[in-house]
Length: 224
Image 1 (cartoon, rainbow, N blue to C red):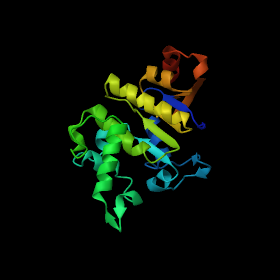
Image 2: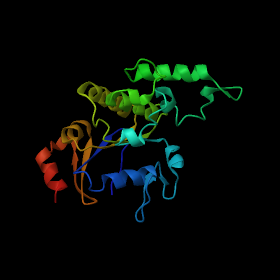
Image 3: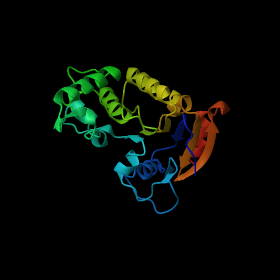
């Protein structure tokens, strides 16, 4: 059991395959669970659809951006508005406003520092770091209150990592809460206000940022 506080980054550490994926799937509605309860903003989400959970202002940055985070043949803009097709901003008299969509794509590319020739190119033509920033643009532009960030910097270069960290820290300052799952211990220790360690589907340790826990301590708890 654990709780997520407003305006904090809660890190989940541990060797991959010890229940982190199942935890993410349960919270986001992508997988069922048979025992216990998960509450978001006071609502028990058992039986909720993915859409209903997202409507509780929950965003999900998936671990595998190439298969779960994007539609490869669609443009950058099309990927970034995939969860916003009902936004009134994109319609004029009941018809899709192509200009508004284009302007939104340009805004997101600029805001999230996505390096590309045009926001109209296929998203799979970008580097891994820029694809990840496009995923972030989609997930974070809907004003989420809770973010599940699963391996948010996996496979991206140092520059893109720094930009992603900066985005996460700015969101936390605004009161957004983040659960970050990562196999990179330095990332977990540097970014998290609290760290939970998982092993064999259970929480085996909990540390606050002030406790100055070491990577060695975490690895011992992750391999019990």
